[in-house]
Amino acid sequence: MSGDAPLPKRDARAKLLDAAIQVIRAQGYAATSVDDLCRAAGVTKGAFFHHFASKDALAVAAANHWSQVTGALFASAPYHDHADPLDRVLAYIDFRAALIEGAPAEFTCLAGTMVQEAFAASDAIRAACEASMFGHAETLEADIEAARKQNRINGDWNAKSLALHTQAVLQGAFILAKAQGGPEIAREMAGHLKRYVELMFKQSKGESK
Image 1 (cartoon, rainbow, N blue to C red):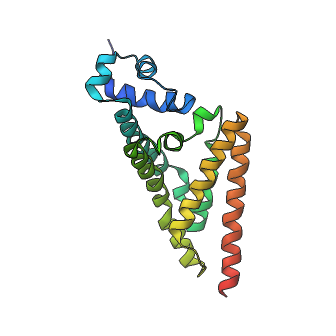
Image 2 (cartoon, rainbow, N blue to C red):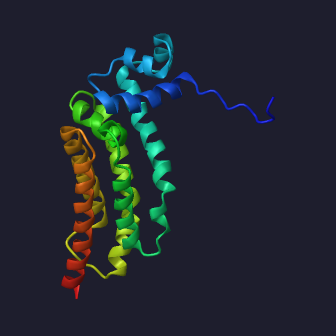
Image 3 (tube, one colour):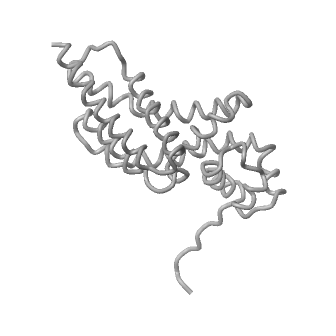
């Protein structure tokens, strides 16, 4: 026998949350049934309803879980290592582009997928998706603001609006990728986003002189 400690078993709730990320991104929220989620997670329906009162309740928890999983990924990403704040922002976009690989279900956003379908049907899901997407955008604001100050830019925009714009472009890129069934167009849109930010800082810096 190995002396290594056994890995802890993941409980049914964790399995369902992970399954929700995969299944809903692949086939959409409306088309995903409780049976689909239980099958993907390898748990019983009884286990599902032990942890979640409904599919909508799972969706809210899944959006929060998505924020935690992706938050950890971005917090440890190498774009933070750049000394210059503008370089960090541009490297963030490069990092997002590098994640766009495989089928759309592998790189698109769970919150973006769910909110497009459920925003008018469930305020709880809408709010959870809003918190996920806007919360991620907030992680960019400090670097954008630092870049504004370092480059002495006094344009008619602020760090929050640009941070949200990056997410608007990326979410739109994911929709185009779903329409085409592949990642190429989404990576192209990320490239345009990077050029936009570079030009925005260059132009705003020139105007502020």
